[in-house]
Amino acid sequence: MRRYGKHTDEDDIRQRPNPKGNRARTNIRPKHEDASDGFVLTVDRGRLTCLVEDRKVIAMKARELGRKAAVVGDRVSLVGDLSGKKDTLARIVRIQERKSVLRRTADDDDPYERVVVANADQLAIVTALADPEPRPRMIDRCLVAAYDAGLEPLLVLTKSDLTSADKILEVYSTFGLQYVVTNRDELETGDAAERVRERLEGRITAFVGHSGVGKTTLVNSLVGEGRKRATGHVNAVTGRGRHTTTSALALPLPSGDGWVIDTPGVRSFGLHHVDPSRVVLAFPELVPGTEECPRACSHDEPDCALDRWVEEGHADPARLYSLRRLLQTRERREGD
Image (cartoon, rainbow, N blue to C red):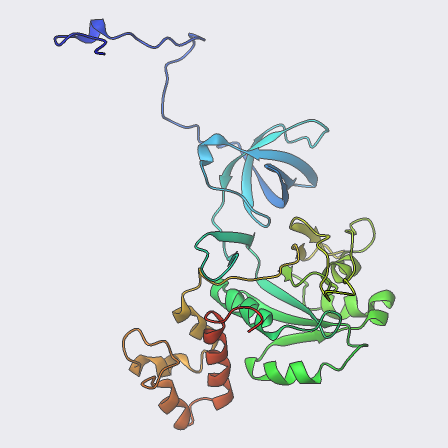
């Protein structure tokens, strides 16, 4: 049904009233030039705990940010009540440019990316040597995600009191990885935490790993009393751990120089978002050899120029094997 006639003018159009009568509607958003800087510590059901100077402030995302979401590790700008007092709420009005973004998907055919953490510069991949059994494919997937995000990987092997770390270290020796091997006795005495902490000073390190590998136990020993999180156990029947960490949390090192971000245990690490051409960047001695590769070369096919590059002595054959192992990871299902 036509509301107005064919020959209407502006006087015939009903004006939507401004109930408050104080200002005209506008699409111009405030610049919030007086906003304070903050660091996102954790996110829980739409509420974000941010560190503003030396105070923990609860905040929510401002409407003008649209679908853009802040995650743990983000540097943000906040307005509103920044006192940190109980029952107060601030607003996040800006998410500052990220230096790095660690992402994963639920599976390799899932196009929906999940941002794990922002602005980290190191990824600690925590793997138990036994109870539960190590899963090299999971390590490979975390390495691919780390290299794609520009993070330096650190391999942390726990429970060496149950079995030797030699076998798994032999597999990853060609990757040039930094690594730390720990056991349960060292966790109790604090020796393990001290050796791991040396690799974390001055950095923002995200910890990832399966449930039950001792990730949160290690994080607790790193950050000290007063900041400990609940830990779980490994199911004797399934050999899998139980999720006790349900959200990512950034915790400062006792020295005040560095952050540890504990993330929930994962059972899969999809790589749908990763461009395979970026993985080779983690092998700088192989990059020049790719210049002679066919267009859109996967670096794992008969005409790949990297084979000739290695044969000419420009790089160690084991490094090419490691690259291809990672490239094939995206095509394999976990557990294959």
